[in-house]
Amino acid sequence: MTAAREQVRRALRRARLLAPDLFAPGSRLVVGFSGGQDSTCLLHALAADHGGLEVIAAHVDHALRPDSAASAEQAAALASSLGGIEVMIRRVDVAAYRRLRRWSVQQAARAARYQALAAVVAERQAAGLLIAHTADDQAETVLLHLLRGAGLAGLAGMQADETLDPHTFGPPLDELGPLPARLRLARPLLRVSRQATLAYCVEVGVALVEDASNQSRAYTRNRVRLDLLPALERYNPAIKTVLARTADLVADDLAALDALAAHLHAELGAPSDEADALAYRLAAWRGQPRALQRRVLRLGLAHLLGGLADVPDAPLEDALDLVASGQPEQAYHLPDGVELRMGRATFSVRRRHGAMTAATLQPNIGERDETRV
Image (cartoon, rainbow, N blue to C red; front, side, top):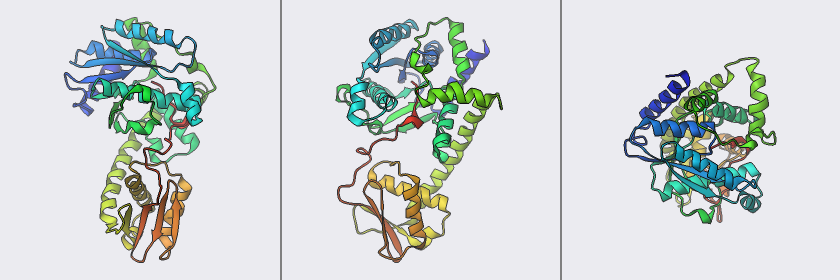
């Protein structure tokens, strides 16, 4: 067995160890399939593995090019040739969706794509969605987050296995049908290089459906891949591996901090007289490191809004400054309709009348989150 095929086989074995319920024999899984080298490698490897999985290839036609329908049919034929795999094509009008929200093409395409894939998961009652992101994609993601400024969550990059609320991808596309309440999303190839997925496809002799937009420097992610990473490789040829490994280490630290913050959120809480408010014991709060205060406050906001909002750093830091030295009855208005108010022994955060919930907030899916399927 060649090095590329062994690398892919090892990645699938690791994915099964990390998520045995998702990859259990008989499990039905949807694979986001573009027809490019990464998703073709993943689909072929799953079909050849004989692990008892029922695999469905889902291709999203973004309707952005005159030949997009023909490309979708070409991708469907490729998927079918990999062992009679069922293929589902979903067409989304990204141009119209973009005008609705005044997003960039990449923002709208990503939101529509993930909604379409989630809708297929719901329609086929699948256990989860598999995306063929590679170690190269992880390195690009970490660099994108560094360029715009990020905390640990950004440096952790993409997760190998996560559960998401698909309604946070963006405003719903009614033509797609219902979305699942929760979406299990896994990335089995996150430690596999893009060089390996190409070598795998060449070895097994499959044709690929190339997307010309991947070479366009109009998109930030492409400029990172085509220009920035090659420049960094002159300083460290293993920079992609280094960045992907850094993301793994940060993700482990982040999980530990999140668990500690969740414990503190419960421990620091105080009774509240208001239904849409949370209260915290002031003296105990002030005894915690600021890093944990920040995480606990974000958890409180997530609880109030029904999901984790993307609160900018500046207002969050201003709110923490007020809690550190503020006097009773002082207040601070956080984004998304949340008010922080000081008391004598406690402080509270509450939703003001008309505040938005996480389901109505504009999702954070800008260029920093450009991802490929």
